[in-house]
Each structure stands twice: as structure tokens, then as C-alpha cells.
Length: 207
Image 1 (tube, rainbow, N blue to C red):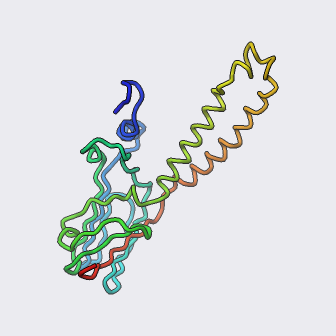
Image 2: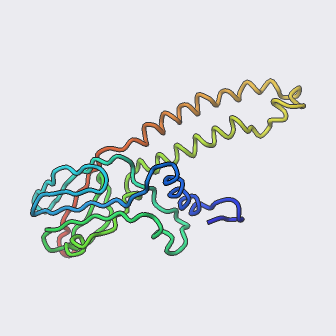
């Protein structure tokens, strides 16, 4: 969780994020979608499922989701640590026998046979939707700009008792403000969720 008993590692930050979300009134609930092809019904724990479209050996549907999926665990997660995140499961009953591959917003994710899909599969949505990583990077960039705006490394030379040496450079510090504002606007744009497209394709035997 920490590298020196004080500062969180990437995994520590990932774990703590769930607790912070709960404390801020954003419940971290497991995502689950259950589809019965025979009945054409979609049940979603969060959001609203659209109609199921079956075309040959393809099954398509959309989920209008109120928020983005949780980010995936970091690469240096301890063994078993990834299991501490809320599970996200997709269950599809009524598929023809064989292996079916799932894509999310056009990105391939996992393969499973019809029996496994009927029992329910854990779906790594956070690793697939590119907007999640784009949002994380935008937040990290904004935080770095904010740090340099309010904690410049050469503060003594800019504002304190040695400002007679380089104080003329202090005019550059407010120039961080429009950069921070730009990142805030980008974050507002990226954090919006919406309709996510899911598609299952039957994989011919031998491929």
C-alpha cells in the first residue's frame, strides 16, 4: 500500500480511491448486466439497457451508463490485489454453442464459450474504454500544473528575501492559471459517461 509508510504506491492510491468515493457519497457498486436472448431483456445494475440486436452470429446492445467504469488496478498490483475491486459481470443466456468474443466500444476484451457466458463472466471494462486513461492523465497534468502554480521550486527568488535577484520572473507564475483552467475543462468533458456499445461475435472453430 505504501513505499515508505507514508506515501501511497500506485496500488495504495487505487485501493484508497474506493474508500474516498464512499465517504464522498459516491457508492462504488458492482456493475452487472444480465441478458436473456430468448426474451430480449436487458437488466443492468446501473444505467439503462437498450434493445438487443441479434444479426447472424453477432449480438449487439448498448448500456446508457451514468458514470464511467472504475479504473483498472495498476500494473504493480500485489498478487490477488486486483480482486479487491468491485467485480463487473456480464451474463448472457441463450447464446448458440461455441466460443464468443466480447468487444466494448470496438475494443476486443475476452473470449468465453456459451456456457461460461450463461454463468456470468467478469468483464475488464476499465481496461477497455480509452476515456478512463485519458481522464486519469488529464487529472494528473492538472495536479502538476496546480502544484507548480502554488509551490514554485524557486519561491525564495520569486517572492521572498532573494526576489531582488529573480523577482522579475514572478510574472510567469500566473501564466499557469489558463493552463489549469484548460485542463479543468478537459476533465469536465472526459468525465461524462454515456452510451457504451457491446458486441459479441461467435468465433469459428479453429480460430
